[in-house]
Image 1 (cartoon, helix red, strand yellow):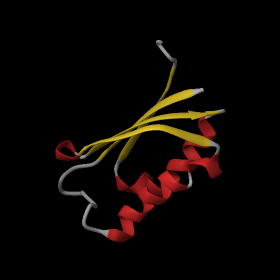
Image 2 (cartoon, one colour):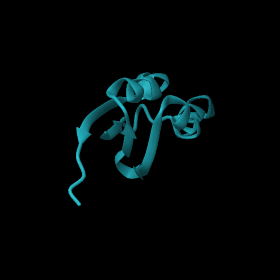
Image 3 (cartoon, helix red, strand yellow):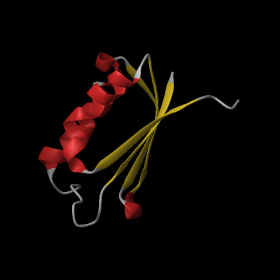
Image 4 (tube, one colour):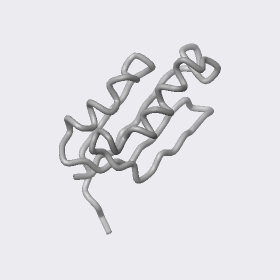
Length: 85
């Protein structure tokens, strides 16, 4: 099952200079497989403070578990998606 996820934060809450917080996203990328999640794409729009993910997992719970450590760093929206190709 595919999912599209978007993380958003503001300039005022940007954590790019705080290594204790950036490591949480680094871990998210490296630990995705441990949660049963495959990351097909991870894209950033730095000026807008937005991250985009195309993910694949058996269920939403796997996605929730993956993103749980970064919930406090901004808003995250996850929606199911289907391939249009």
